[in-house]
Length: 179
Image (tube, rainbow, N blue to C red; front, side):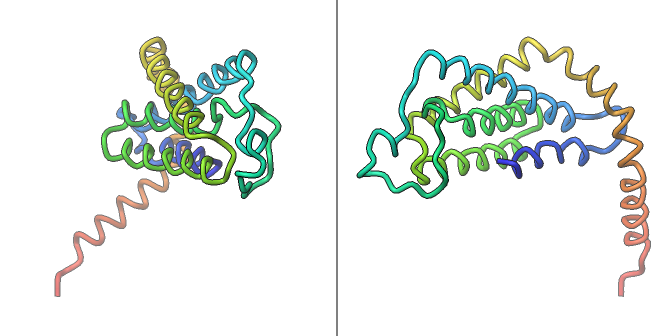
């Protein structure tokens, strides 16, 4: 999960500085949707306390990681991963969205295989993630671009030298004679 969050933040810095910032909006929407989704998830766990598979079926479950004392439904990892993935898919485009949705699916599957969640916990987390991404884009979509512009004033000067160096290297490669 930390690598997934790092990839989401990385989208921000991979977006070329300037007035076009689709990936920055996708990154901000993804992180905001994950936060909203985790809030919704916490509200659900206060209402519905489903025991984890290794607690409900101790003889039938082989636990592959450290146990958690939190309820099983919904999977917080799935909520956050799918909220990020759906937001990026809706804003950032098909290819990047497919990549993040595949990553979220792997995270969900590993939570099931590790014995921490039932498949329904992950599917519920995916649904909450989708709902969170849709809510962020529907209710807050107009506010994302101004926030991106504001934060870009700080982040763009940090990445501009790297982009200029890449542009110079590309130009040198283009000018090189073909032998």
